[in-house]
Image 1 (cartoon, rainbow, N blue to C red):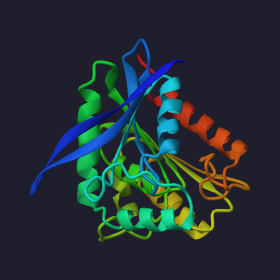
Image 2 (cartoon, rainbow, N blue to C red):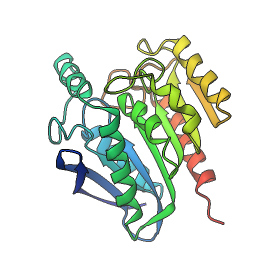
Image 3 (cartoon, helix red, strand yellow):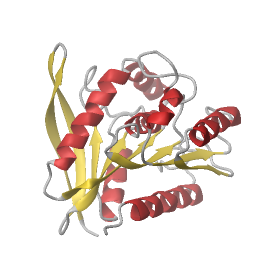
Length: 250
């Protein structure tokens, strides 16, 4: 399916004034309305990889929106994957807060619902690395019906800006959740995956925790040395299957 893409700028009203958030949007070139999906970046910004993810999602019949979640500290950060990039990305990640991120999620939901080419009753989310964590937070919004978290780090150990771990929010999730991990991910040990699985089960959610054998952290990013074509393909098949089931009309 042919796609179109462009940047957009939105105003967000905060307690101390108005901030501006850019978002990259990819959509099918024709037809619709389509389900809408919020795409959350890794620590490296809405870089080439994330823009390609948006196009990949759009090509399957979705309107994909990737918000620049670092906009309060830097505009349109675009990093690579070297040590200096990782340090810079983590610096901005550490400046994010739960309240700020949830304002960004709220704005994305509003913007998607206001689009003529989006089905307002069919919204989902997907995120990668830190963005997988943010996607988990987004899943607590009632409007989000199906969420996929690729190797979301720190969900059971922290919350952006401080406070109890984000996993404590699991009972507030209403939609379906797909958690995707690699068995060889050195940053997310098996015990953390088990904590996520147990919390989702205890909350009575519709969920799947999928651990892909042999995959490392970042296995779905073809810009990284850890890229694993087979694992990436398997994971995306699971994501698109879930969205097709949850967003089926009728």
